Picture 1 (spheres, rainbow, N blue to C red):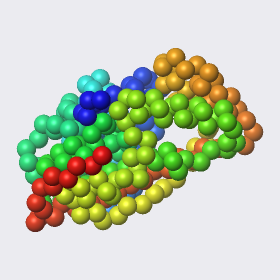
Picture 2 (cartoon, rainbow, N blue to C red):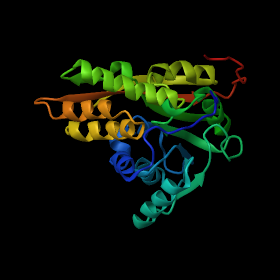
Picture 3 (cartoon, helix red, strand yellow):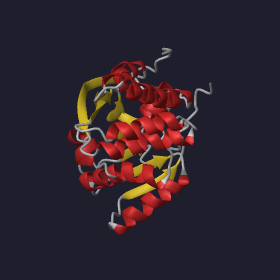
Picture 4 (cartoon, one colour):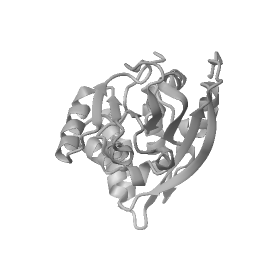
Length: 263
C-alpha cells in the first residue's frame, strides 16, 4: 500500500458534497472555537465545501484562513461559495496533506475535520501539521470511530453492509478506527495534547445517511449491501448515531522532532 495514498472514499459527487456542506463551525467544529482569536492565521486541511472554513474566517477576522484540499474542483466550488457570502479573509490552495505548500511555522492553528481517517499515513500528515504550526500554536482534529457507532435495529444484514463499507474505506488506505488513536498520534508527532473527547451525531433522517453510504457501495459493485442499508433505513424506529472523537493540542516551543514509528 502506498503510505501517502489519499483515495477519498465518499468521493466528490453532488450527493457527497451536499452532505458535507451541511456541516458548520458550530455543529462540527465546536471544539476548535476556544482556540480561535481575532487576527489568527488558520489552516483548514481537507476543507471540502468549506462551510466550516467560512465560520473559522468569521471567527478570526481580521486574521486570515487558508483552506487546502487535494482536489481542485471542490475548492473552486468552495471559492464561489465564499465569494457569494462576501468573505474576504479566506484563501484556497490545492495541495496534499502530507506535503503542505507552506513555509515552516506559518499558522497559529491547524485544523482538520474528517480527514485523517482517509489517509494511508496520518502520522506523516500530522508531522506536516507540526512543521507549519508556530511554536505555541494549536492543532485541532476530529475523526469518526466506527467501533463506537450505534444503529437500530442492529440486524445481521446491516452489520454486513456496514462492515463492507468499512472494508472499502480501509482498502482505499483509510482507518475506520482513527478517532480512537488521535491522542496517541498527536504525541508521536511532537504535540502536547490538551483535550481528547467524544461526541455523538444522531441522524434525524436515517434514509439520508443510508443513501450516502450505499452510494459508495453501489459504485464498488456491492449492490446487495447497498440495498441492505436502504432497506434498514425504512424500518420503523431506525436510528443511527455516529461517534466522533476530537483532540486538540499545542506545539510546545522546546519540542525536538520525534522519530517514533507508529504502526
